[in-house]
Length: 142
Image (cartoon, rainbow, N blue to C red; front, side, top):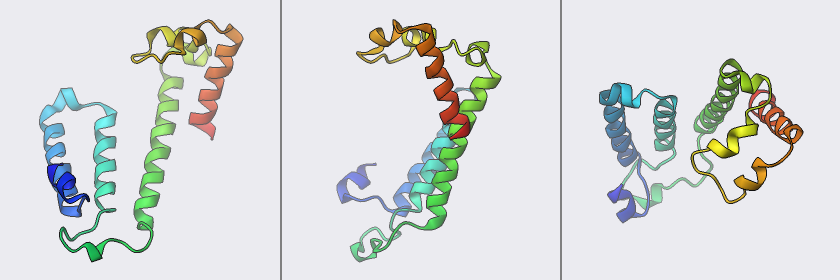
């Protein structure tokens, strides 16, 4: 990270080293790093490494064209899997998602509430059902 800051640009080698270090932390962490987002961060990191130039000091090697299509489609597929997975976990998990009642208490229990959470919490039950149904539509169908 310090080299990326000093040189003003990330290189493939630097990103690959950072990815390897994070991979070793995730591998050693076992239970503490067994959540789904760890593998998603690793996948995002390796895709991002291939967007960086390979040469650390040859600034003429900076890409003069768009990113490789493999990386673009890799990121798109990653986003698709994250969204679909989030929707499927909700539908398969707690009954409140199937009953469209989760938003009734979401604003009271969210980890980092925003200033409008208090206002949204007092919306009607019908509004909360529409919110939950919209969430299902976006994550499962859109």
